[in-house]
Length: 368
Image (tube, rainbow, N blue to C red):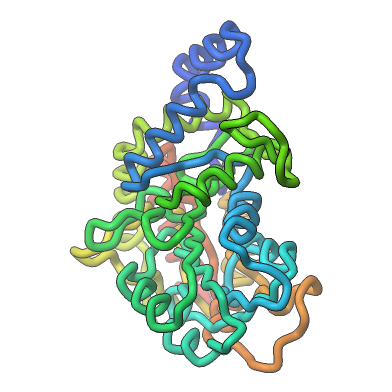
């Protein structure tokens, strides 16, 4: 029986051990463990990749979203539209600034249903936080039209979509602010944690810089606003920078793994997957979710056979105790929360392991 983990950072380290150790030695030898040159180089690279004027590294994507909300003036009494189906950090920063998250159902891919989003717009609506779930992007033009028609801002939660694109528009390019996560679970991840805010607005850029560094004005050196300690270390920035330089290879291998899953898993009415990427879109394959009413039984069976899986996500955001219980329901998101199962997907997954996973799934459905 094989043992196949869900996450892969240990395998990534073994495959790139010499490079990672060289990066570590260089950073420590420089003596600049904070605010070293790798931070600025990474910010420049993110700006280039996402076709943005500015990028600011932060301690996490949670901070990136919070700083974006603060910098764009979202405050108590405001409403912010957010999908009902996502990670907690898509919505918790809204509460942190004193605003109210307005949850919206999803479509079958897990992305926000924009028609239903239109139904919840009120005079209090000031922003929308779209989430590109599993790395599959919402159409940027649809988001921009929605924001323009309703006179609200977009804060793009691109935490899961680094490297994805739609009609040539990269994730991280849409709206007043865009936020990335470099958590170890992402396709490009720190050996710790990290995030980023991208924007084209110089004033927002200055505010984000101040927020991450205790409120320090980058030009005067004075502390004029309340800030936070959200700097990423030089080492983490250097490790992320290295991964951005091999991003094409990372995504290509993940795509190859996904294609094998598409071809080898026995799909049926009882088992489906995300739509295959069309010619106008490119996934980063952050996750490979299956959808089946037998999710829990399949997960248990795979675990018994040595295969780790994940559930993204078992509860809807509006069902979390942090938020006030909404009166409306979310049928599609609820269905996804009960049927979604994420398979291991990373470049270090071997062809033999992929075949084993697919054959194990075949065995399960043959007997159930």
